[in-house]
Amino acid sequence: MKAVRIHAYGGSEVLQLEDVPLPSIAEDDVLIRVCAASVNPVDWKIREGYLKEFIPYPLPLTLGWDVSGVVESVGANVTNFKSGDEVYSRPNIERDGAYAEYIAVKASEVALKPKTIDHVEAAAVPLAAITAWHALFESAQLTAGQRVLIHAAAGGVGSYAVQLAHWKGAHVIGTASARNRDLVLELGADEVIDYQSTPFESAVDPVDVVFDTIGGEVQERSWQVLKPGGILVSVVSPPSEEKAAAHQCRSAYIFIQPRADWLTEMAKLIDAGQLRSIVETVLPLEQVAEAHRLSQSGRTRGKIVFQVS
Image 1 (cartoon, one colour):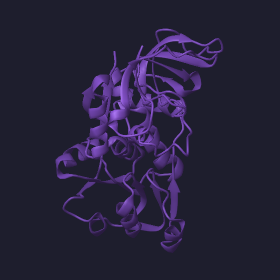
Image 2: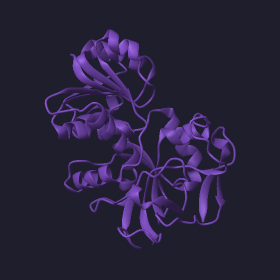
Image 3: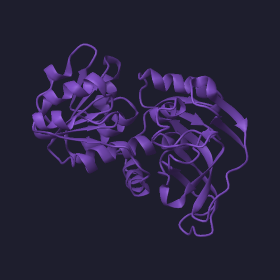
Image 4: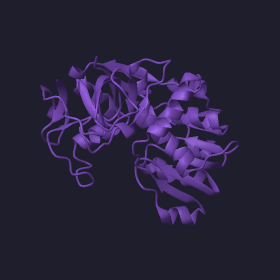
């Protein structure tokens, strides 16, 4: 099969599309024929070696941990999936990923694909939507009527966070560029702040939750808009516990794991028309370097997806 692998850490020049053996599957695995795989910031962070101390990958490594496809075969212990099932997954990030024509995934990490969308749209969902779900509902315990500020609300994670917070009944405020204002409102935001022209801390009344997908000075400024007892949740860098205490707030940092049960719930929301994918760019695997360049720019709307088959 064809797969994009890295043999060393580095820039986009280390990405190689090459012929590799089909993955072998364990008794608890399913082999998925990849129809589409999406790009996430964690992909290029791993490529550049930022996580090598955290996860000691054996090289060469196939990148990509968002997949939608069709079950090709199942391991001896798998009873809940069969050949021909259309599925999607955010697989274990410690195994070879989905920038490939086939991927082996533990059956417990797989859910049936939403029926009403295609594989390109489905591949955009798992990692970003699980991240948003975890941040808002597990860490922040967001409830109806609460106020939430979502940074980078038009991005891959942010676009799902806006929709999920709206579905929960929260008052949703998003930061986005002027060109993405209408999109963020369409997704369910009640207010949109143009971060390029307006400092959000001067325009936002106190909120119960800040969802930080940017880090750095944006995270630092976010303490100013939290109510006492509120929470700042980041997926970029751990917020300061000392600053949280000084502002009488809480903080959380999350690094998600596969959650097939949440994917099953989100498939229901998608099929009910309450959650949708925003896919800005669709590319073949041959253009993997361009996909990483776009992702690293931090200016993409929604997701970048590879159409594999």
